[in-house]
Image 1: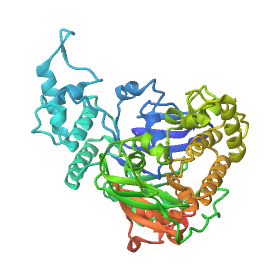
Image 2: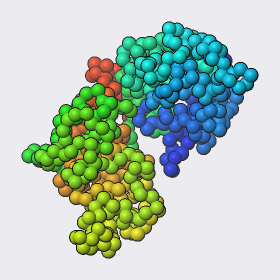
Image 3: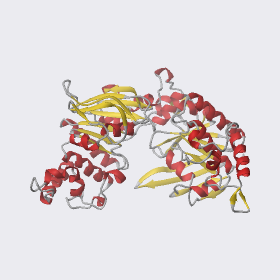
Image 4: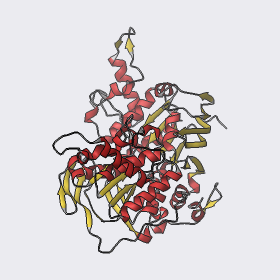
Length: 526
């Protein structure tokens, strides 16, 4: 057997006390397409980052063509023959195709000084022909290309440095069916040339049509490594799904009153970049979950409702009153707030106290004198202390530095900030990301309590068990539009997952999954 182009053995990587990947073994042979699939957060991105030199593992080895490697960065990985095409293309839009091809890898030069334009053109035409862009003029500006042409140029850039391993991360996002076919034909041609391909995608029909072998990850582990011929789509979905073990799994949301009024009304909201407008209504005391795959537009929808991202059309009302589009300040004034996914970068004020982080959104309430724009520190401390007790923020006093708290308790502080404003509609983007299981349970209790008190809660989460436990209703987005809605007893991890992948009931097959010892039914509980 020939030496694999890529061989990962026992790779482990921990972030903030949580293992992103745990003892992963994975290989890609020359001339093989290996699909890497799994739910959001399964560990796929960490694998890409480790192989491409963007991060290093805590333990384990990564070998290229039999030689163990530890890259100092992405450039070193590229020079060693590893090329990555990310979902978000990194192109120099104002430069030509040829200039983009040689960018970072070096251009042919005359006398070691000046770029040899003729040699650059020849080499550019050579690699463009290998990705079926024979007719493309290398002097064409990148801005003149279609999305699929830009992606193919980035694949050609990998060939510029004689890549042994090509990693494609969600390569068909935003492409039409015809463009997807063009890209797949190119990938198959590269396989025939002996290039190893690691293909990361949520689009299972593409994976099943293209891959020679499929590796499934779940919770940082490889749970299946199976020849494509041994898998059906239903079996693959079952392997991806699994069951998240959670201390509050049996809990269900409190019943919703039949006559609860609509608090958040979104009508024909067209967020910039989405393919279709979104309409939805959420009632007082309701917890609405928003599911979908990476790139489905979940975060963009929340940010559009809140006014943080551009909105082309549509209307948002809170409690029957319209909210000015594109204005977070107007949203906050209306009682509509957003807790972002990026707790560190866009949420917490690092180096400041719990009191500061709790009251910063509502300083007007704490003025000692109505005409004096200076808050009363004593009043702030009383408010912060009350919220610390109410939310059971462990290890915190009003003047404790927020950075001294755990991730879960920092998240509680950020939630308390919006509770201090009196907000009635709370949008949360991945509210439990990066926190431990016990802190998650406390956040779940807090969100249920908020709903029971009459607040309206909208939760975006990649954790399907989280949506099942918390939500009265779940909408699933496909390409920015609402593709399905699940209500009450319809909500389950399996149902959400099947809806995300648009898997019809007719596709269900409980047959064994070869090489895993798991049947289609049992795999969902693996």
